[in-house]
Amino acid sequence: MRSWPRGHAGWKSGAMARPIRSIDVYLPLDYNDGQPIPEAKYVSLQRELLGRFGGVTSVQRQFPLQGIWQSGAEVYQDRVVIFSVMDYREETQLECLRYLERLKGRLKKKFDQLEILITIAELLAI
Image (cartoon, rainbow, N blue to C red; front, top):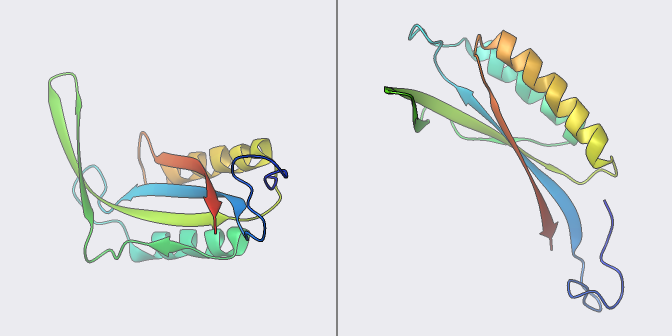
């Protein structure tokens, strides 16, 4: 990541703005059979994200979000939580994507899911 060059529309004299990546990991609270996923699996992920990015924020599992989506004629519902990190590190985008792809593969197995959603947004923090 880089800072705005002098003269760029995002650059201001004296501004403390810097680019960051916002990463969100969406996880279900229940397996596909309706059984709850053990708390230890979330704690393990929380520790991994804390170790890699230096911090993590998550929606409380007592107050999950509800996800609804459709595939063909089938409508599915999930209770989901989101783990969010702000990546201030100097890692390249490619290095970050490689890590997140490996993480996604591990999470799909760990949470017994066909798919796990991970989003990345490039932001400017002030």
